[in-house]
Amino acid sequence: MRELINWIADPIRSFPIFTILFFLMLKHYRVVGTKKFAWIAFLLSIPTFFWFAADPNFFLIITTPDNIPISILIILITFLTWFALYQCAVNDARLEQGLTPMEGTPENREKVWTWPNLVYTELFAIIAGTVFLIVWAIIFKAPLEEPANPTWAPNPAKAPWYFLGLQEMLVYFDPWMAGVVLPGVIVVGLIAIPYIDTNPKGNGYYTFMERKMAMTFFLFGWLALWIYLIIVGTFLRGPNWTFYGPFEFWDLHKVVAAYNVNLSEFFWIKGLGRAMPKNLLLRESVGIILSLGYMFGLPPLIARTKWGMSIIEKTGKVRFYILIGLVLLMGSLPIKMFLRWLFSLKYIVALPEWELNL
Amino acid sequence: MAEKGLAEKVAETQIWKSIFRHGPPNNARNRAAVVAGNVFLHLHPIKLKKSGVKLGYTWCMGGLTFFIFLALTVTGVLLMFYYRPTAEYAFNDIIALREHVPLGIMREIHRWGAHAMVITVWLHMFRVFMTGSYKPPREFNWGIGVILLVLTLLLSFTGYLLPWDQLAIWAITVGSNMAKATPFAGHGGPGAMLAQIGDFVMVSDKNDVRFQLLAGRFVGEPALLRFYILHCVFIPCVVGVLIAVHFWRVRKDGGISAPL
View 1 (cartoon, chains in turn red, purple):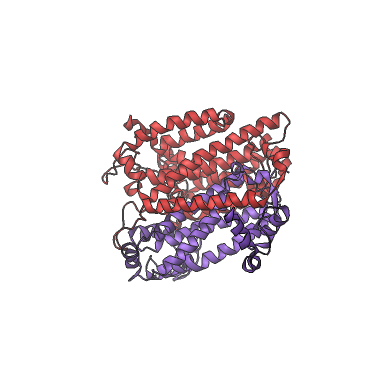
View 2 (cartoon, helix red, strand yellow):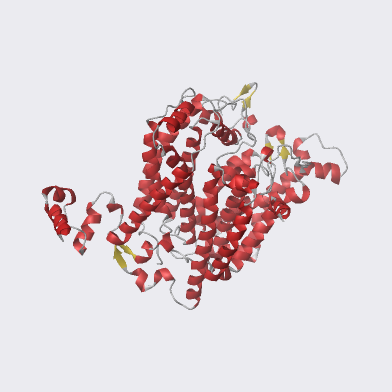
């Protein structure tokens, strides 16, 4: 059984499973967003957790002091995702009946005094927060390792946990993409959200029905491409950034076959049975055409589809092309992941001479 | 009854009246006065919609983020009394902090608080997205919030180096090596080789963005000083200003979001 879970946890299998579960969750959010579902999931998760924690390797990694925040994060996100969907389900049922969402009932629109209604809540939050931090600080000592030694690198050398999603992307992309371009795109994309999403509905209340597309894109990026990768990067990556299952000992000598091949090698050597051309641009022409086609050829084609035309009609051309650009950049990560897993593809464009690998 | 009499007496003294200017907040006039007249409480409106007070709606994550920011400022200032940002002293000062300061949990609160703030900021953004609160008229404030999120990560990242242990320098090495690959501006990134005139290399490891970040080609003492100042002075000041803008705009954009 533990062998099986180790086997499933490998991103090759766990990412597709996570993605499928994610879309099932959104499709059936009214089933997920019920108290009954939450109780069943909660009751099932408790024995599962203890069974997991009984394993020494798993126990070791979750009780590493710097990993505790991630465990807290996972629990909070699981609960809050359910809680948000629950409120979406309640509101959507109300909206279907022609009622206002919960937040808009006359009772909730009523104005109340800040003192005492809000001030006391804040006071309670401050006290609870202080107690929580003090208890946490007393139980767990802040970690301190050997003094800094620039000549001896630990293995694995990991970035702080909140950047491990980016470090995990390094498996699939070179640093200029995973460390610079994609984080930049995330920040710019987040800031752009309110200017792209012109849907006036769902402003100030929980609803899924009225903003399905916006929520699907955002939640996929947030849960599958950010949180999931952090979990993998923290718990499942050991020495040499090799994959280790949750119950697996971090054995330094684990050997993983690495035989990743570039697209240009596929094309010239395996496909045409010829030597690679000397000219760099000719050598990588297939990858360059594919990449440019993906970023610049695909959007006009999508604009002609029924879906694309409806978006353009609603939001205009500029917003549509920015949206598609961001979505394609976001999609480049799962695409690259699947290409790696299915074809052991290393780079689509491999120009190490120019430090330009895609 | 005797105690209540005392409280009333205190409320009538000249000192009490000079501080609060109004009676206890048990009637409408005083409840308005206490919020409007207090420099800390006047961040709030005097009245607000009931839906905006409910924890189920707000998750309290924005408020907790601000609380943790304040807690980190206080514990951070206390830690600065014990810490010198040099390669010679930094690690030993942390050891001394651990060994010789009685009941010392300030470093623990600071470290766990830093992790907690990253979590609460993310969850705050999650909630704001789920309630569609970035929609007009709050688009600009969402953008301010995204920048605050990035600054929170940078605060945490710069602080990670300060203990000057193996965990610190190698985590920062991994992180800052990314900067090396910045297109056109890092010596290991695409486009850097275009900026070369004859034998003269314009973007090298002696002047690229990683060099500017670390004040050197590797994580050494100059990087420690640079991160210390970024962590303790520069980024907190920027964050402070942006928090003020963020809160101001929450009020000006109509308070906590609610159905239109």
